[in-house]
Length: 338
Image (tube, rainbow, N blue to C red):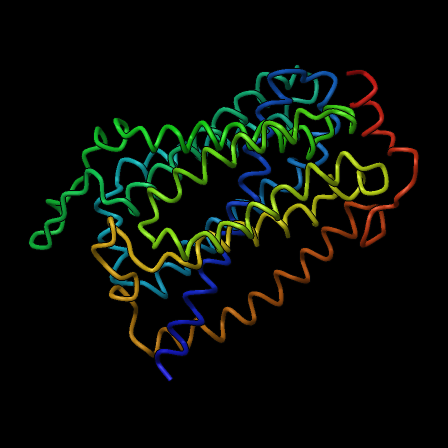
C-alpha cells in the first residue's frame, strides 16, 4: 500500500509542478507585448495578468507544501544547496507582487507602464532562476553535497552556466515563449506564420536539450516527447485556422494543454543529480504519504472548481468562448492596431 501512496503522490506533485509552470509561463510570456508594444496590447495583457498573478503565487506555495509532504528528506538538502536561488526567488516574488499591486490599485493617477515593465522583468528572472535550479538538480552539475554537516553543502554555478546545453534550452524556451505570447495575447493576425515558426524552432532546441539533461533512455523518451510537442503545436495551428482561432487564445484551454505538455515531460523523470539518486529515495514516511494523498484529492477538487469559475468569469458568463467571425472588442483592438 505504501508504494501506491508514493506513486500516486509522485504523479500529483508533478501535476502541481506542471500547473505551476503553466501559470507562471503565462505571465513570463507577457514580457514580450509589454516591452514591444505596451500601449496597443495592454488591455489584452492586463485582462489576464491582473487576476492571475495571485493564482500563480498560490500554485508556488502549493508546490512547496507538496514537496515537503512527499519528499521530506529532499527539502532540507535542497534548502541548503539553493539558498542563494531561493533567497533571490523570494525577493523577486515580493517585488513582482508589490509592483503589480501598486500599478493596479494605488497609482491610478500615475503612469503604470514602468511598474508593469518592472513586474514583467521580475517575473522573467523568477522563471529563469527556477529553471536554472531544476537544471542543476537534474544534471547534478556544480553540486557539492556534504551530509555531515549539511550546511557545508553548496552549489558552484559556473558548470551549469558554462554548459552549452543549458543555453540551448534557454534560447529554445525564449523562442517558444515569443510564439506563444503572440497567440496567448493575440498580438498578431491569425494569418501570421511567425508564432508557428518560432515555436517549432524552440521545440527543436528544447527537445535536444531535454534529451541531454533528463538522463532518460533516449529511445523510450521519444514517445514522451511526442506528446508535449503535439500539444504545444496544437495552439499555433488552431490560431491560424479561422474556425478555431478563438479557442487558441482561450486561457483555460491553453492552461490545460500546457499543463499536460509539462506533465508528460516530468513523468519519465525518476532520478536526479545526473541519475545518481532515485527521487523515491527521499520519500516521506508512509503516514505522511497517505495523509497527502487524501489531502491532494480534496485540493484537486477545489482547484478544478476554481478553474471552472475562472473560465466562467473570463468568458463573461460562459464556460467556453463565444466563437464568431468577429473578435471581442479587446482582441480586435490589439490585432487591428498592429
